[in-house]
Image 1 (cartoon, rainbow, N blue to C red):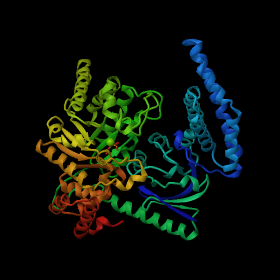
Image 2: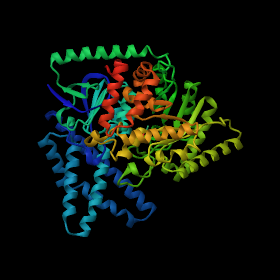
Image 3: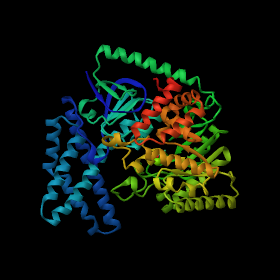
Image 4: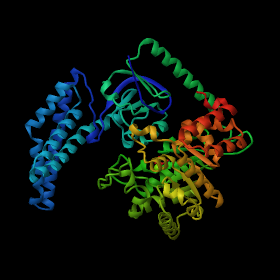
Length: 582
Ligand code: PEP
Ligand code: MG
């Protein structure tokens, strides 16, 4: 038996057999161990991928030669030569056999060694071949991985997925019935993969560093998402404890579910708007089952992932309409396409960026792709005739961006009016406050926005310069950092001055202690994974608003995140000890 500890990102416990998923990222495949008897299968997979890649290259070469000219297709001759390089092929097969690693791991290691060797050579022509090696490497790896993606979506039995990393699109393609938990080597607490795990209501742990090196397909493991532990090959006593822990967790959940029909209201009647975050329309039943007051964040970009075309107006309209109708009369806040950062579309080829989180993403992308943006806005507006919809724009950094987005929204309204298509004329427009610049000009933005939604996941990342997906610096990702509380308080104050509604839709709201701090600071709404809403509701219903207001204001006077966390925990413990239990 062996225990590894990581960052718990989604609660619950699960025991099951491992399925190792090989990451699609060329540079982060990691060393995936295999059993001796799997070696022939891995070599066969390698040969299949080489044959497939060769067929693809020949077809592209023919197409380019026919359409653009023979001389432009020569580049693919170089690719074909690399593909047939016996030394490279032998090196990969040798590594699979010797190190007992999956072919992806062997191939990624060998190809990286090749291009590093080429880079050292003092010859411009050979240096340029590095990009050919990279290109062909990616293509072969993609063919190996395509196979993996199918595995994730077509599982035959319940499994625990173990991966070096999982992209949001990998997670979105998972067969939700049969993935009972997952654990990864890398990843931070508010990465989109972690958020997806909470939406799927499955236990998950990230940042385990070397889980992929410690297990192979078929191993038995326990994932304890409450503590952040992965137990490999558990003994009988541990299995027994697991069964008890599972029972306790189920009891706790059903206890909390009793709060479903009760309002999220403090003991002295201060009402908080407690809503859920979703990525897919099929999460609506879970939102309703957990007693949410609506949907506070619908991450529509998931619609665009895992497909090779863009979703059209009609298709989007149907999805938004379904959500609006099912949630009616409760409100649904639809966030417009938040592409980029760690979410990429297969349908649009975007230039490689050094810093994707600081790059051409979210509203920045939409404002330069007005055609794509308009299609979505028209679909949302049309759906607004079927329920109570609000719209918010992600990653607003300046007044100009919000105004331009609003202008395009109004153009979409005008088009629909002319076409005689019905929509709600009073759809409120909001800005997500997730960049420090937006928080600092929230007084200006509050004059033009109907509401704010604080995206604390990104706000913390940008204000503290901490990559939200990097487990190495997860200790610096501090929601109680005084700078964060000051920014949040400033946004709340600006909104109140202009009578604008202000909510928070980041993961910060899923921690009952932090949720109370936010309510004490004056937030109107909290939106988080449906799964954790009852726990937050229980905390809100256990306290007096007058008490938490005083505590929150005092919290603003401390100097460090640690002091603030300690202070609020101690104070909340005095007034409602049950908040810190379980
Ligand atoms: C956020 O940044 O807090 C947020 C809610 O948006 P996302 O997590 O999708 O970036
Ligand atoms: Mg965000």
